[in-house]
Amino acid sequence: MCTAMAKSMVTRDAEIQQQVLQELRWDSRVTASEIGVAVDDGIVRLTGSVDTYAEKLAAQEAAHRVTGVLDVVNDIVVNPPGSHARTDLDIAQAVRWELEWNVMVPHDQIRSTVSDGWVTLEGTVNTWQQRTDAEMAIRYLPGVRGISNHITVSGHIVDARDVRRAIEEALTRRAEREAKRIQVDVHNGTVVLTGVVRSWLEKQAIIGVAGHAPGIRKVDDHLEIDPYS
Image (cartoon, rainbow, N blue to C red; front, side):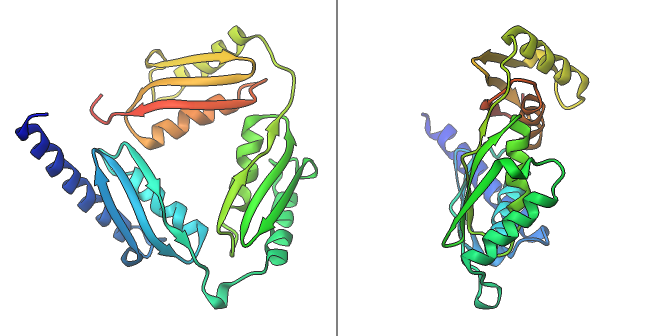
């Protein structure tokens, strides 16, 4: 790599770092002073500690909103303060309550294990979106330090061509993306998404579309973010 190009990349990373710091300060959900930001070739690494898992995710989302950010490594540690500490039993009870009250989640098909604030979800649901919804339902609970989602997806696997067509039609209906720029491959109930998107939000929208497809057991995301595409 030539010296001029290397200097340009370093300058761009420095700009992204400052913009991520500004975005963290702007986001009222985040205590920016507790979070460190480093950038290398458009990849952002977040460090430090926060009080809640929700704040850790909010910091991650804030970093993804910045133009030029390709990926985010979230190494923030969750350390609930004493006044907000919850026992594993408290957390397990809260998890069960949230799952039962969420109409989008088949709560009786899901079980959880809580160890030192870390929640592991297991069980079987009918769609990939239900798997995602179960995790979303509990990620903002006080005392949760992290989530491991081991829920599997059952259901009848339909013809791969029909699934691919359904996903591509759904992408075409969305203003966020031209479907022709996204490659959709389906094999044994797994959707593999490849192509280039302009933002993290666009990427999440496309993954969400794929997750609603009938017969899908897993979504493999290989989408690349290029804001200048």
